[in-house]
Image 1: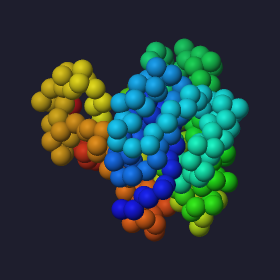
Image 2: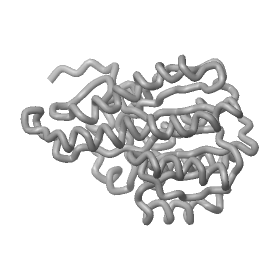
Image 3: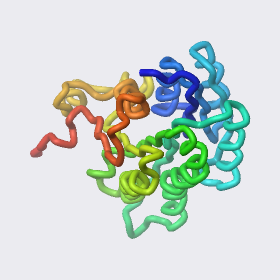
Image 4: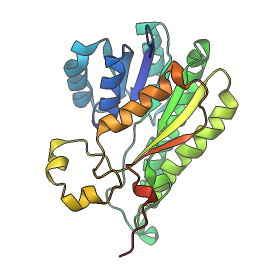
Amino acid sequence: MSFENKVAIVTGGGRGIGKAIAEHLLKVGVNVVIAEIDSEAGKATETELSPLGNIRFIQTNISNEESVKTAIHQTIELFGRLDILVNNGAISNPENDPIEQLSLESWHKVLTVNLTGAFLCTKYAVPHLRKHQGTIINIASTRALMSEPNTEIYSTAKGGLVALTHALANSLGPDIRVNCVSPGWIVTSEYQASKLTEKDHQQHPVGRVGQPKDITAMVVYLASEEATFITGINVVVDGGMTHKMIYI
């Protein structure tokens, strides 16, 4: 895979899957901007990953149009181009209120970050991506396809990302490819890993809960020249869990 001189923006790149994506892109030679709202996490990640390559942190609120415009502008000022946009930034709704108690404020907040944020980043990245036949990769979730009770906002936002993906693929092709990755159960910290049980692993046909590298490998492949015939798809990376019939 040749990524020489290429530049990527990873939203929400200060922690979790976004941080892992930034790390993998650096390892294959991509220059990376982490667009992250949390300045402490962003700076820490920039420092930690800088030995691997050229990485810059730009504090960005993806739900704010001016903040997104500024981040894209600063990226071009720093690197002169943009080839890859990874729309990973997202928040959850920790209350998980039932629908009759769900506040409109919570609904708007999650949708604005998780879905409108991807729209805004795409809108302002497209003119630069088009110059280099770039690619957009949206990070959705298996929650776009299946749900637990009281997860309407998050599932709706992630389902919207899947729909946005195939719509953009048609609107922006052939200049820009747009794909989506839907992670399943991915453990992103040592603390989470320490809480796993054998039963958790056995729920997956592959025999284990997922790791960030399972997602980053797919993102890097979709961004590569080897994937130039792939656009508009949603790749589910979940260890087969969404295809396992479970009777209680």
